[in-house]
Length: 344
Ligand SMILES: NC(=O)c1ccc[n+]([C@@H]2O[C@H](COP(=O)([O-])OP(=O)(O)OC[C@H]3O[C@@H](n4cnc5c(N)ncnc54)[C@H](OP(=O)(O)O)[C@@H]3O)[C@@H](O)[C@H]2O)c1
Image (spheres, rainbow, N blue to C red):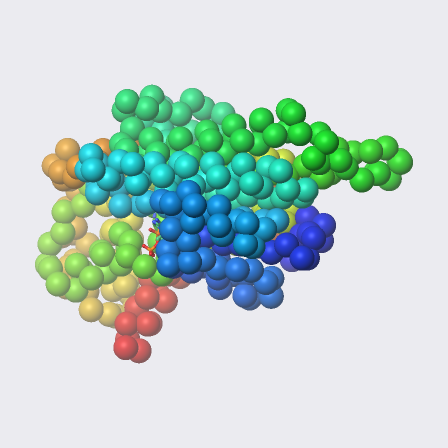
């Protein structure tokens, strides 16, 4: 792999990863360690992202040149509790705003931030493009609204700095001897994704557990999206951070789509093919409409995200392998989980 922009890093200034104990955070730890890229990994006890002073203190202490933010308030149903609202917005919107204001003023600074399909409120039946309108906010759940506010705060911080901040980011001479301001600009990447699974609690692990306990399952069949591997998301985040691609929003999901019901059937059939602990037969995984599965936060029916933009960007980088399909990644993951459970 080559990391063109990483070569421009001021090695006195580190890469800082927030959210080290989450699914994507754990995958980032593995990915950066495998690539032997040094980084500082921070969890809740190192920096409370609901506290502005805690974030400022950490940014001043480490003075990072690259931030990868994999932390978020992800308990979507708990986020609906009115008393939680301030903390949800502090973590999902104010914290990324502070990170963005900081990185926007750093020469060659990079902010990678993960976001979500929940910023869209079923205004379309087909896959959303990065350029599609988000919201409307009054139809988003609190989690979706707070993540959208985080995206907007990042864009605002970078736009404000780049409109007024040429003096802060004077560029080096390019090959033709001209000053290229572009070359020293800080950049941000907002990676919207969906249906993440990795190390930690997630839908796939829940289905595997229930498949060993019950002989019938009812699973929502009218919400559609793409299950996305945390490990792959970490690799994309690291790859894009080290690339020359332009700032912006990118939809980071594999190819293909399915419903929660389709995913459950696939997961359980894959586990059964490994001969392990499956009580329920796939014909006893019953499809139900979302309306019959009552939860406090409304989930999108349409979680399809177009991945054409990121595919093009990755094709310019070291990602030479085939772009993944969700089925291949889920199959590998289920086999791994089954293997781990057999060992323990
Ligand atoms: N999971 C999904 O299905 C999904 C779908 C679309 C987008 N995303 C986005 O992808 C990103 C990564 O998601 P994930 O699945 O890896 O989430 P996750 O497993 O829930 O991890 C989130 C991490 O954020 C940390 N965090 C929460 N509040 C914090 C605070 N006040 N201070 C410091 N750290 C705090 C948590 O710390 P603790 O470990 O201490 O709780 C946790 O480690 C997020 O931006 C999320 O919005 C996720």
